[in-house]
Image (cartoon, rainbow, N blue to C red; front, side):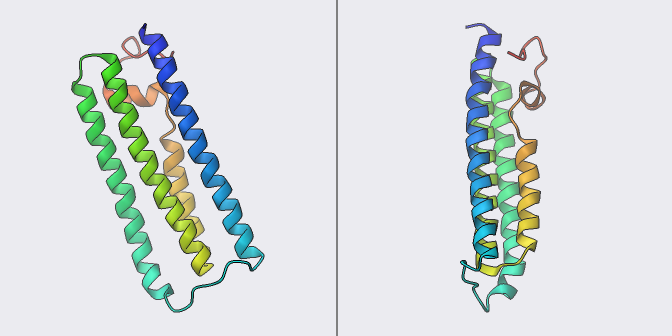
Length: 155
């Protein structure tokens, strides 16, 4: 298989995964906001003081852990000689990173449902922007894997 075909196949799969995760989060966001606005989500009283400090710390740790795990996978993939193995390492690193961001975002929506505090939607938006920055593209993979456009074409 040529590098262009391999690139095209790899990124087609990654874009489907990225899109599915994005749609899932969008549906969860819309549902959460609607439930709170309609008064259908019961508010959890008495824990907001604990949550206001713990949640940002936990989300920051999860986001940082996801980035660290992904960067380790990318570093290992960089050492591989074959393009297919490099792309497999990139895929794994990206999936781990997206999953960690997705988990952090879902956690923030659950906390928003429990507390009805908009600050958690703002934090959700920040995590969402980090998620969108990870959109799988050949240019993103080249940057992480240290490849040139001739080594990893756009496909």
